[in-house]
Length: 82
Image: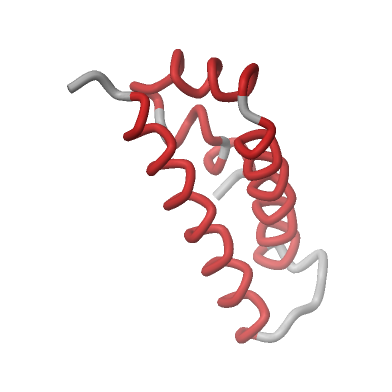
């Protein structure tokens, strides 16, 4: 999957406004987004064969990315109207 496929705006297309507000107002969100971007790049390089890594290392990176997505999803949920 391309790196764009792991972009937070692509993963949460219905929450564009919330993601934008979080980017402007939350240092924690910006740190999560930066870390997510870095993980997505690392995973893409490994999956494309550009960087060697064990299956365990790749699995660990994917778990880290999933954990960050869970955190972002929770931040979005806090901002959704009831």
